[in-house]
Image (cartoon, each protein chain N blue to C red):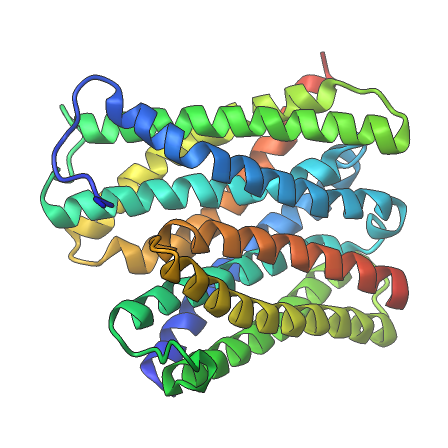
Length: 180
Length: 197
């Protein structure tokens, strides 16, 4: 078995196992999460967003670590702070957009007007990113300090953690908004 | 063109730079994903009773997205290292090796996913018959194989096009590959669920 195949297989095994955990949580909370119209429209984009934003942030941090622009420390790390602020802002903005798209799509195609989907998207994004963004930074630094290349590891790792955190955040978001 | 930050930027300039450069591609990716999700919403009444498919869905989407990232990353590496025959990219030994490895990984991962999802659903009390299990396996394998082929060829052809226009493929390929992979996979799943399940 060649080296490339081994690395791809291992990375994929890690990634899809995390996805299975996320999928199992979805199945367990099926009646709660999918009772609202539009959740199916929101779900794929919301899950993918963790990977897009977290992955880009990890990649940027990895680049500046390798270049020596920053050290893997939290204190007085302006580059890190700006990356985290940017990632958080983007995540909230795009999640709001996803909620709005879901709201209008359900309105147009199913003639149901339920704005709660927008608040669920925002609430879930807030919860997910408060956890995920510091986790991305901490994990990237940890991997780098241990002597590994974050570029090789962070991709499947973020896919795994992103799915689990996203589903948990969506469940909490649904509970919070529907109980109001 | 500078693609990396070599020194810290003052005030919030770095934050705004990241937001500015990422915003539109993320909007595009969000719209593509929502389109795929809309297909699922139309089949909501059918899909919510197929517990193995619910369990399978995030992982299958992840896998196809990851394959897109792997193909796109390898493409740019091969291109910049001069290991790709720009006139006949699909004849390159490196492309063939990557294609074989991606295909094998995707098939093994799809079988693993369906088996584990089926086992979890069965433990949860879902009445999973052998016929339904093999139908779900068939749907997962078929959509995976079609998407892998599409990704491999579209990424290499699209990447060469971008490169010839004087742009860095790294800025385009990964977000585009993962977005189209997600959309294509969801569209195929919706189609096959309608037809076979």
